[in-house]
Length: 356
Ligand SMILES: C[S@@+](CC[C@H](N)C(=O)[O-])C[C@H]1O[C@@H](n2cnc3c(N)ncnc32)[C@H](O)[C@@H]1O
Image 1: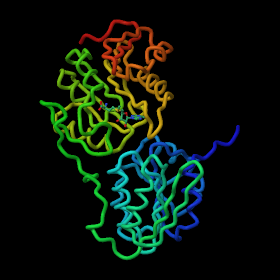
Image 2: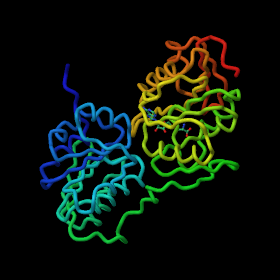
Image 3: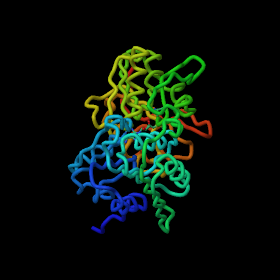
Image 4: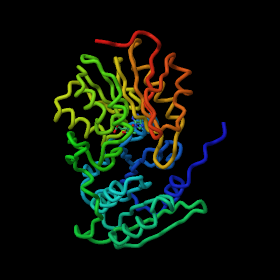
């Protein structure tokens, strides 16, 4: 089998290892991180990994790496205890600023932050801002394909006033999601400031007989789970791969008194039971890329997690050919509604649905 080509960001981060002082290194892994791309880091004995994605945790742990799964909770590293931090920037600005600020705290004097991203991801600005905060030497490498990596040396004490605005990244806060619905959410979670129009459409058309069991697959802060509970579901479970989503959803379960479990997992792989109803607003964007592979993965998970007589409601952008993909795994596929932007597709195995 041909060797997989390492994408430019992990590649240039790997190259930058030679500028890192010896000692404990921390690698922050984004949702697209793959073991094969970080092989050189796995070989270094003093390296630990941190990720907020369950999928990444499973893959790196499987390769024997020491990985922490959290909402990038870097407060667990004492101040000045780390020699180098490696970070491929994420989509969310607040998250990027949170990692830069945390690095300023946890790096020892003379320690280095290695930060990398593509031109269109705002990497030039991030390197400039972090450079001003760190006050030491700055080494920048740009690849031919537009990936840029800055190696920034921390010198002296970082002044709290100079930290980058991170929108209180670590804190959950109440957000008026809809006129009658306030939920706790935060940056780093899908659509955290508002009710997603696709999810709102799904919640409005999904038939949830009272007493049914429901799974919110890819739950985010738990919007669909709370709506299902409000409609009279007896038990609602929720699962997501994002650590930030799991903690927000757990908080909202307590606040709304929802009966059920909230579990981190990859497409529900940690959920070991089936449900009368599965609700899903699947992610068809992975990091900066659009992924069609995920469609199949989510459909497969729905088949596994749905009772034989169960019903799944899935919302997608109107242009996504979900019905076609679903044909291989479901017998009954019905487009319940399509407003030109989003459509809700109802999937069953052709047996009598739950009417508890
Ligand atoms: C479009 S959002 C929907 C969120 C939420 N249901 C809502 O309506 O606001 C898709 C969610 O799927 C999650 N997700 C992405 N990949 C996943 C995976 N492999 N396993 C489980 N959840 C995943 C994302 O973290 C995100 O919260």
